[in-house]
Length: 181
Length: 180
Image 1 (spheres, rainbow over the protein chains, first blue to last red):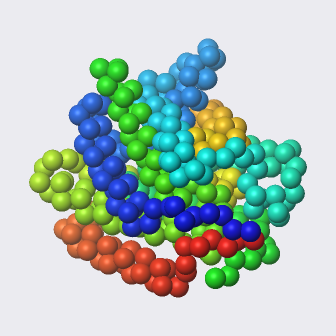
Image 2: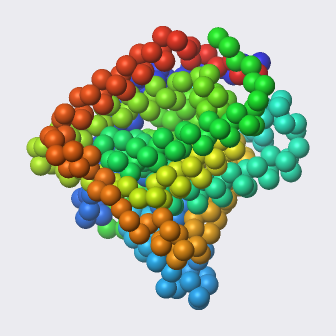
């Protein structure tokens, strides 16, 4: 089985458009949030965590909770996440690839259709994703699309670590994958 | 002012999500294909964006239109990076693509949003030991300052290196994902 990718944009077109968006948003961000702040996604999820943490009195002095609940970049990036959902919807409607899907097909073929099993992996994976992004101060967007473009040493180390660990885990999950060209 | 922030956030997200989905970066077999070293469309997309924005950022920076602020290096970048990478391998997508996938009708990504926020919440709970262990010492993240050279001596070789990687991957691997 193979997925339909005939309507996809070329990687070059997508890459150039993302770079223009990334530079333009950096400008506007500086104007409205009064600081140079690279566009990212992580702080938007941090906004949710910050608001959740705000429910507990004991956490009122926690620096991470405070930062995410108060800083303008977290507030803006929360709406970036909502925008991403709308953008994904619009693009998938245009190409006709919008499809309700529970578990990815590739996962089903190798690990079975169990919702509980995939659910457990989604839970573990997403918690690790959140923890790691917070500790590395940025995800793929903040540390690679922005950080590598800024030639930052921290982001180089973070980006290489993303792939090193990701490649190892993918090997363990799919030891017998076939996909030769 | 708050309305401007909301509209700006929504607009950036919409355009970003549209490009990601339209280029096919959000697909589970593509992300796994990259981590299994079989399908490099995402890598080519990413490095193209990095080359282009690296040149633009520094060009505009030299003109004084914006200020490039590189992220510092601390142990959190390495440890957090490895934790993030493990999560990306298990999930099959990263935070930005996760959100765009919800719009495409991929239901499991809705749960991942709450898992991700919960991961950051756990981070907040562990901030005290984490700070002393991983975030206490840091190195200036600006490589050109560390090496005391003009940043264009880094930008040009980096662009050539990334370009060569793209060229090699493009010759060697097709974008037709055949993972089974």
